[in-house]
Amino acid sequence: MSGHSKWHSIKHKKGAADAARGKLFAVLIRQIEVSARSGGGDPESNATLRTMVQKARDNSVPVDTIQRAIRRGTGEEAGVTYEQVSYEGYAASGVAVIVQALTDNRNRTSAEIKNIFSRNGGSFAEPGAVSWQFERKGVVQIDRASDEDELTLAAADAGAEDVQDLGDAWQVTTPPTELHAVRTAIEEAGITVKSSDLTMIPTTSVALDQEDKARSVLRLMDALEEHDDVEAVYANFDIPDAVLEAVSA
View (cartoon, rainbow, N blue to C red):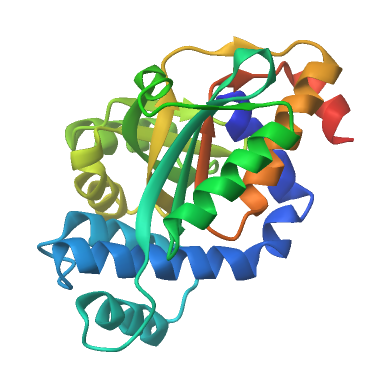
């Protein structure tokens, strides 16, 4: 389990995820609009839209809100036009960072994200500078109470690559193209899925074994994730459990 994932898990337990629920809804709606605009409004023929709709349902976004977002994306209803943009950079200690955003003003968002990096000990980088250190994957999370053998069998038969114990949940990793098939197979096996999404998983990691280094990196992560246009932040840091607990206390 990556340091970034551990940090998110701790934040969720502390209630930070609930505090950000309003922003999460806004991001999910924008993701649906962008997906519908780029690939059409039918989730059956638009795999990205299907993933975004499922993600919204997992987070209790109302069905009518989802449908309106699709119609705005296809132009059936008026709305603001968003585009997806990515930024790359470094946090302190050489930690690689990828930021994905949805914006209606690319120049404004670019300037603001660059400013967040500089104000929090990081630096902006050119496209491609750090993305080679990550792989695009699908992830499915399942309640920890589920039977490991049954889950592993169902996931493997559908094309999953790995099943990991996250402590409070199982995480199944898949090729991005197999995310929907793996989730469907797990559910058909009678196993309840908590969530599924596409993500970027680091292929290498930077160890942050000192509290001051960890705090510096996490300060940047939090500042980026709090920006209204940001939909996701990926980083390749790894923080030992003892240090992470101390920092989050």
